[in-house]
Length: 235
Image (tube, rainbow, N blue to C red; front, top):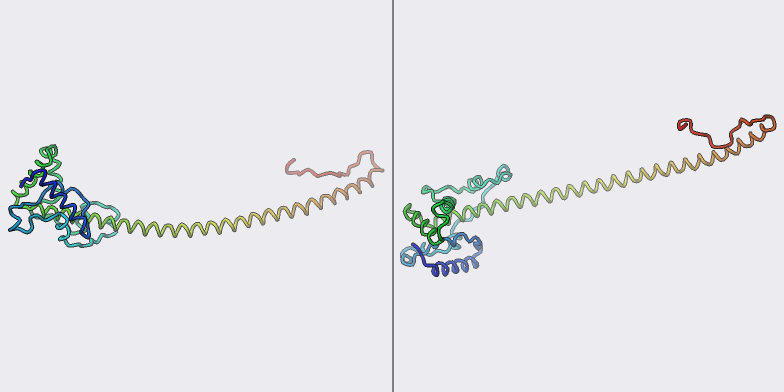
């Protein structure tokens, strides 16, 4: 049944107020397209006039189980199957409604006309809009549950890798310290050897000078070297 714009806005505001006080408030606004209230039938059908939040609260909260293979793909249809969301026999799921709303005949129409067209099709198929909303809630909960599983897996992975990285960094720090100590030891060894060698060379020059002085009176050209000897490898 079609509603006036004022009535639709009034009921939508009531939906929002009801959603705010429930334990699991509904934040999605896609339900604003439909008004599932028929005042004429409220007295005989308590289902009529239910808010979306009330419909959501009536859907059993079941946490789906997602296996490792599914958690790496994130395919929506696989998520729905894992959550045991079976398409109804009449075929009118929220996905079917989404397809209808995107059809060339409907998508460019005003909102009221869209709503009435969908409700008319549902009425002809003997389907209540509440059934479609229940399907939407189940799918939304399955997606939220899968998101929580993914977030938890991501958090656990991050924690593991952070711990692993800390261990690697600690090992690197230990190795760096160890190698720095070896480098320093090598430098000290070279410095010590240089000091020994330069001291010996000084004594060697003094010894050569003494020898040269002794040879000098007997030769015209002294064959004794008294300076630094060139490295044969460099020559």
